[in-house]
Each structure stands twice: as C-alpha cells, then as structure tokens.
Length: 444
Image (tube, rainbow, N blue to C red; front, side, top):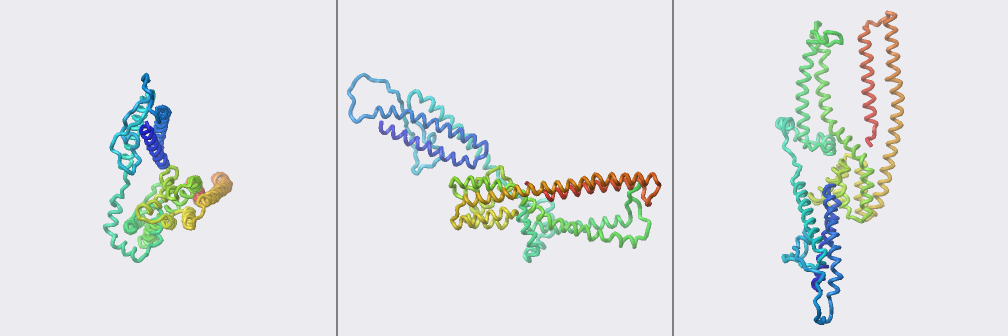
C-alpha cells in the first residue's frame, strides 16, 4: 500500500506540473486557446480531487503489524493502470518513463477518473491541432513584382550608387521607421522610374494645352487660335511642375507614413504602459512582458514594434538592453522611444521596473487627457469660424448676387459663373476645414 500511495502522489505531482505548464501557456494564448486551456485545467483539478479521495482508504489499509485472518471485507479501492502520456503529456521529465503507471482509486470514482482522462486527451488533441494550424501560417517576404520589379530592372545599379554615397539618408531613415517593408534600393528605383514617367506625362499634358484650351462655358474644350509660340511659354511650367510634385510625393511619403504610424502608437501607448506596469507587478521576467504585449490583439501598432525587440533577442542574439536601445532608435514614435530607453536604463541599473512603468503610465495618461482637452477647445474654435465663414458668408454672397442681378450692375461675369464660383468656394472651404481638423486631431 505504501507503494500505491507513492504512485498516487507522484501522479498528482505530474498533473500539477502540467497544470502549471498550461497556466503559463495561457498568458500567451489566443482567446479560443485560452478557453480550451481553462477546460484542461478544470479537468486536471477534478482528477487531482479524485486521486485525493482515495488517499484516506489507502492509509487505512497501511499497518505495521500483520492483521489476524478473519472475514474478508470487500475493498473500497481498486488499482487502475494509465499511460505516462495520460498523466503528463506536456511536461518533460528528467528520466524518460516507458512503463504504465498504476494508481489506486475508489471504486465509485473509477468511472469519473476515466471520463476525465478522455476529456483531457480530447482537449489536448484540439490544442495540438490549433498549434499546428497556427504554425503553418507563415508570413513570407514576396519577391518584387509589377512596378517595383520594373523599377529595379532599370534603376537598381543607379540607386545603389546613391545609397553608397548616402544621398538619401533622411529618406532611408523614414522608410525604415514607416514599416513599409520595401527595401531602400527598391524604393529609390521606384522614385526614379516615377520621375521618368512623370516627365513623359508632363510633356503630353503640355502639348495638349498648346493646341487646346479649357473654359468654364460650353464647349469646355476648344482649339487654341492664338500664337503657338506665345502659348508654349505660357504652358512650359507644366514640364517642370508635374515631375517636381511627383518627386516630392515619393520623397515625403515615407515621412507621412512614419508620422501616421507614430500617432497610432502614441494613441495606444498610455494603455500599453498601464498593461506593462500591471504585468511587471507580478515579478515576471522583463522579456516576458514584451512577449505578452507582442501577442496581444489589443495593441496592433505597438505590438509590431515590440516584436522587433523579440526578434533582436531571439534571432540576432542581442541582450534585452541592447535590443531596447536599437528598437528605440528606429521607432516612429518619440514617446515609445523614450519609454524603451527608460526601460533599458532601468534594467541596466537594476532599478524598480514596476515603479518606473507606473510613473510613466501616469505621465502618458495625463498627456492623453491634455491632448483630448486641447483638441476639444480647438474644435470649438473651428466651429465658430466655420459658422462665420461657411454658413454666413455664402448667404451674404447670395444676397449680393441677387442684388446684382436685380439692379443689372455686372462685372462682365454671368450669373451662372458667379453661382458656380460661390459653390466651388464653399466646397473648397469645407474641404480645408476637414483637412485642418484631421491635422489637429491627436488621433486618440
């Protein structure tokens, strides 16, 4: 019976170890996996209770002296044999066990225990299946095709020369921080090809305006009847303006993407800091904090930056402090950069990580509230201006238009053109207000 008691206790220890394994795994699991893991843990708890119920009967049958032969009493306990995989299918033991394990249970609990074993095995199969499906989902970097491929075929060597001479250092920095997943040499090649195409487009547009002119009255497009030599000088600016606009668009697009990504990260950062502070309070290892944030579905943009930290550690072999510094230097968000540098300093000097994160979370949350209040006041000011400019001004202009049409006084402009002009002005002002509100909005 002592051996039976030992087997029961060892089996319970293995089940508890496996419960601990699944509880740690639950921190990084998806919602569906968390639900399955909770069911697994519940099944393990019930198995431990069933095994515990048999211990009192085992102890009763343990005696230091030999019992006097008498009337046989039907035992209330029974041995069952289970495989090691049923007791411990995930936790790796130091010594491999190949034999089946015998445990002692109450006869009334035998059916319940076998049922719990089948439940655990079924849930484990589902978890393994989900893990396999998830593992097959691999994000691959596709080969350049279409426009990037065409640009590389024409300008790759030329772009490499520019990169070696560090002609576009600012552009390359913005490109890396914007997470566009385009190689610098490819993007510069695309820019040069775009400039070449824009020159041809500008030439054809200029030729069109040399021979034709556009008016606001019907017919809207008509043949030009004046001096073509003078016309060439009037429209020659098109040949320069279109390529310049194209080049500036290519050059500043990564910068605009970086700013947009930075504002989205800033929007999530106060809540990320609060989450990190609550996790660090449990005494967890710092790198595990970033793993939890990276696997979280709540912080889409911050998680992409945090994954860079994990890649620096797991793939490139950097320690946590250097990984934090490297990602901080390439982050599109100044606030996230400050947070990561502060974490690196705190870890390197042995500071209190939980205290640092709590204070930084308070600061970020205060800035979040101030930005919201500032935007609310700005929106109020814009509303007053909008009422004055967009609502009152068109009404005054319409009254003037009516007075002009009644009095017969004109400026050489027809009533239809004046009406169209007022409508266009109102439309342009509305668009400008929308753009200004979008620029002023903090994104929180």
